[in-house]
Image (tube, rainbow, N blue to C red; front, side, top):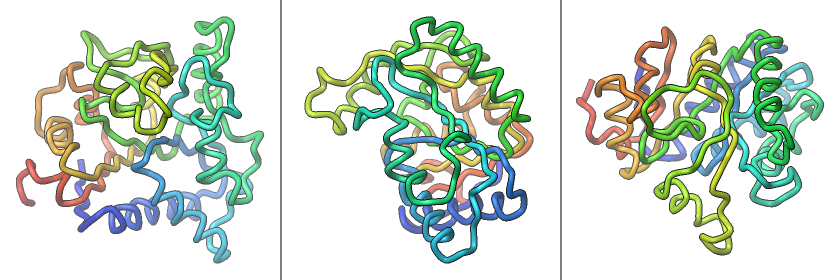
Length: 244
């Protein structure tokens, strides 16, 4: 893994956004794997600024998001489809038909998950996969467990993840208890993985991802086996890692 140290959230966002922008400029028809949550919002703002300045063209880009809450329609203001529209897609010249998010309302979720994996494979897999990391080391919604699950699947969210996400809902009772998530195998198929992390609450997870044993109890630790991972993190998130 290559570690890029940032001073703070804004610096992390700038550096990660620049890496993503460079990917789009270098390959205008690239496939991006995208993430949601508070961490990447600043990087998405950088991409929007690049588009508005005429430096980035998204017209040929395809995107595949990591996850979606089960039971939420795409127009729900806490769905990840809605998040992506508000924080990126509505502000650049991307073709919405080329943007993909798991279907939170799928009747046959097993078939829908298999179809999602097939769509990513048919696109040639991600040229760049953006990830955040959960306080418990989850990537996507791949929660700590007994195994690494290869394909897109439905997961029961842990109590810590529900608590962490409750800040975005009116009540913790409104937080969905399940989600669809891209599996570890699909994430690892990406040609490049870009991990963003900020804040002291992520410090243990970041340390375990980089320096801990490879174990499904920290799903992000599998990234040690990927040939091309860049971690962009602020000083607080790297506070438990050796200075390099």
